[in-house]
Length: 404
Image 1 (cartoon, rainbow, N blue to C red):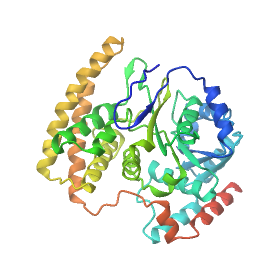
Image 2: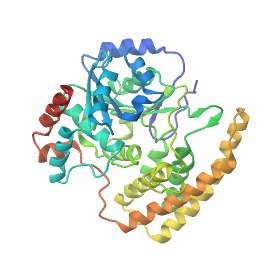
Image 3: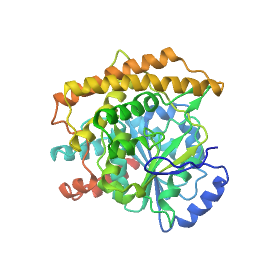
């Protein structure tokens, strides 16, 4: 149970333990006719064989207020796609599977590539982008939510709490970010948020001074959470990155287009555990090495858009400030763990900070060496302008795949 303290730039909706999930679901059922809801599930085929997704589907079978579920399926052969259709067939809601590696959706991707609009790299960002485009193509939903498919501690509460702020008839939120307790098995998790994003944002503030955008990012309790919801106007207008900077990129776009009063965060789970990425210290293109580099670049890009100037000397200053702030945070996390009877491996924490320091410098070098990089995928309004029949093509492709 959390307290009700409000800090930072945006509203925080807490879990105070006084409202059972059944009460939230009853209200959502009352509002679903006026504001139909669509859930997006981006997943890899391998997650169908993992320990989490079977239980997630079990929980979603109990959700009665959802109008649609859109599943984005990556890295699947035709045989695996057929298996995925059976796997998800017990969902009682209208559901659609985007076979992203299938020939029909690949053909649409090729058309978009001819217009310079196709996502530049594979991954979760591309998967989410096509799922959101398909939600727009169906034209039914008024609000969409998204969560990952590797949540080991999943409860249907997550979906209800994500949708509630953006469909409540008297709330005015256009975007809602989920957050949750990030500890499991007696250990503090959330390494990238704790040891990269928070100290890096504060280091950037030290270097450049007070900044509304950095203050906005620092207001989120868990900015890298893969769970968020939004009204459909947001879906059609924002651009999102195709790399690991997806979550930060979405927040950046929301900050650019909406006032703080239209944004909130909500406590969606008492406990949360999922598949943890490898640190990958020897592989800059994998695991947390790749993730932290992409996230750092996302922050640098946004500040550059705002007119901040970056040079090699500035990056060295950022690195030094980040390193000191991150080490100071380890002391705080260690003390917090001890008072709660948890363990925190200080040596491992500092090894992680060393890696993140290298990734920050790598991100800076990449940022300076390629000023023409286009990290964001186009918003769907632009895609529709360039390819007017793209929504029809998407619907037709998914319908034909369903018949396989």
